[in-house]
Image (cartoon, rainbow, N blue to C red; front, side, top):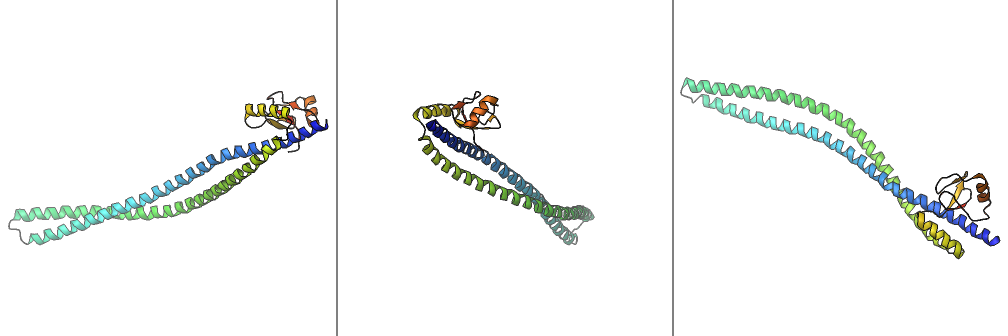
Amino acid sequence: MADLRGQIDILVSVARVDSGLNECRKEIARLPDEIARIDAQIEKLTGTEKAAADTIEDLAKERRTLEQNVEDQQTQIRKYKTQLMEVKTNREYTAMLHEIEHLEKEIDSKEERLLILMDEAEEKGGENKELFSMTSKEKSNLSAHKNQLEARLAELNEQRGKIEAERPKLLTEFDPHLKKRYDRIFAKFGDMAVTNMVHEICQGCFRRVPPQRSVEVRQNDQIISCEGCGRILVHYDA
């Protein structure tokens, strides 16, 4: 019985190690997806900022184009007015006056559009200032959270390494027959071959352990398998 008790003590130690290792692996598997979601959120905010900045730049480009057109047309008007002094017929004179009038109307239309563009740019600039303030804070918070997750991931990988180094030492202390049974169960599930019973629930398959069997498990003086999954059941305070 003393020898069996010793083996069960080892099983409890292994159950603790395997449980910790399993939790590490679950969180390690989960964190990269969470980090990727944060990256996607940051990328989306950056895209929003770029779209807002592009709108301002589009307005500025249109303004520069219109200003250049107005300048070109004003230059052309000055040329026409100079040429008016040189025309020889009334027909040419009238045609040139019509051309000047047409250019002046176009300039009026463009200058009206320029005023609208200036108002739009000013309004959009104010909106963007508020937007960038908000997105900057959000990106800062997301980056801080990402750094925390990356630090946690590094911590978990280090913790997993220590647990994985500890586990083989415990397994060497198993009785050969128990070790063979343990290896067979572990090969089947790939995570835990021995597990804790918490509140009469197997933590491997989460099936309720029958009342009499749960009493026996709590005594930790015999090898008992879960009727649901076949893992070896032990009991310890988590």
